[in-house]
Length: 117
Length: 114
Image (cartoon, rainbow over all chains, first blue to last red; front, side, top):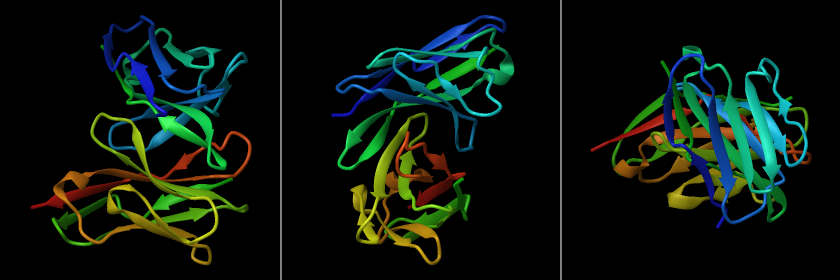
């Protein structure tokens, strides 16, 4: 149980185009999902916290107009990278949160590799 | 605010040898502590967690960690490693309540050699 999927697993796009990444909780409902960004050989940096039916909360320094997050249902959140540039190339990982034992546990997706040419 | 320091960026070790990956944290409130493993081009998998209670926590794949409040540490150990343990390991901290946002350390690359 507690499986999170991401689609696509990798994507290559041209500079200036927009790319949408989907994050789905397959066997549980998640009121909260998180989006992370990971540069090569570096740690995960939280970009935003997404709650179903409300606007995402972005971390300091993350451009909300560039990284659009939509959490339309309890099993789906999407991240759209608008007008992508080469510096947006990165590994994007989502997580979905649900209550287990006695705390809110995050379950991570497999990640999406974005390459902007 | 919380922060996490992983003291070693890389740890090379021979197969069947013991290993310890070090993690220190900083927080003004009580915290939850986690260790995650990441294989190449994959997401994160939870190895173990400390929420409360016993300070020695056992996880999957033979790993264990000990919470030391006085030294603000949560070091990860395995008595005998395998080639398949080669991966990136992240220590993380969160403050109980709210969204339980995770703050990650920089990661430690464990390289197991035959």
